[in-house]
Length: 455
Ligand SMILES: Cc1cc2nc3c(=O)[nH]c(=O)nc-3n(C[C@H](O)[C@H](O)[C@H](O)COP(=O)(O)OP(=O)(O)OC[C@H]3O[C@@H](n4cnc5c(N)ncnc54)[C@H](O)[C@@H]3O)c2cc1C
Image 1: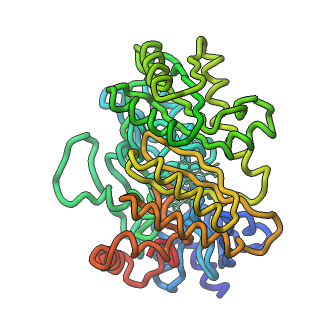
Image 2: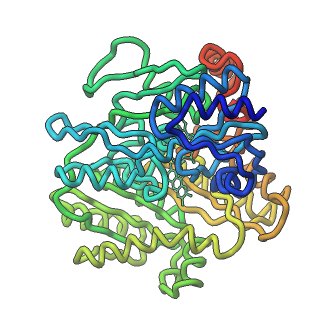
């Protein structure tokens, strides 16, 4: 056993290999509260692509399972260790290799923190648009592996819409380059798309060529509107988008979320309001866009609707949205779920979530990236339990099935990971499952890449 680890250290001399159980402890878990992590055989902190190639060649030789890891912020158990694995972290690969303002692209190593790339792009008047709420702690590699979304998706799309090409190390250590540096390009299969969202089950992403966009000239203007029901708020979302307004953010919070924020911060926003819509416009005509959104909200029955008059006010209103998860987490263990439905079905989906909560007596607070039809029902349960109570899973099962019935999906942005595997076949069906398995077998015949995740 030790000989094998010596062999790994010799093959990847610039990497840091950790075998001490206490030092490995913080790498065993990600941010998913309901999964039990395994015990890794070792953690390898890769410094460069050569380390990753050597590590995957070693893992193949010795049939060691590999769990890739970036920032460890997965909410689906995707980066959770399995017993005996090589936990391969790309978090130290933090170089931004290139920013090319002329073609509006960046080349970044997998470990670059998402917000750092955006800040680097800002120095050239550009932005990296994908902005998961975890953007200060998650990495580009993890965002690519999960096809992460974020608050600005409603205008700029998800991570897949910002990736042009990838450098990937395949099981066994072979290096693959996918895609190109141009926005257009259709030579061959879309391998970049295949690896984007593959959750570490097909290979390890080491760097990426990413699309940048012109940075909005001003801080977005924010509009906040209160409604007597979530359904009325959802109707306002549909009206705003149908009117041709192009918001850069459309977030809807339910009454349970507002109450949690209010109990903590005494905002007063929960008084008489059952749902709060927070919308932003980052365009040059943002004042007009925000005013039009306010009108659409009032027409949809909003009891209050305010538009920020300064950047400070805009940030304050957005802060209400940012407080939602910390406020809910104060109430107990929070299992953040992630279903997505066609946005016209949002009111039905929320009604189904409320029914599931009542039937199983489970506390669920919901926050939605409403413009994308993406809901995060947060299941809250008592701290200190060894695992999530059965009622939580029964309610979650009902919520996932409702999303599928309404023409939606089990996961809009967090991924399948460990926690949604048992529902995947219900969404994909037998033919799609068979194609998935064939792709997996072709690239990872020994099944050592992130086993127990997705498939
Ligand atoms: C507070 C909070 C807010 C969040 N908000 C959002 C949000 O708004 N939108 C959203 O989409 N998600 C969100 N998430 C979930 C999470 O941040 C995303 O899934 C993120 O993309 C994970 O990035 P990471 O670097 O932490 O990856 P990890 O958690 O380390 O890994 C995630 C998955 O990617 C794989 N992986 C990691 N690095 C690589 C690599 N280099 N090559 C191949 N596979 C790799 C892992 O095996 C795992 O399956 C949030 C999480 C938290 C804790």
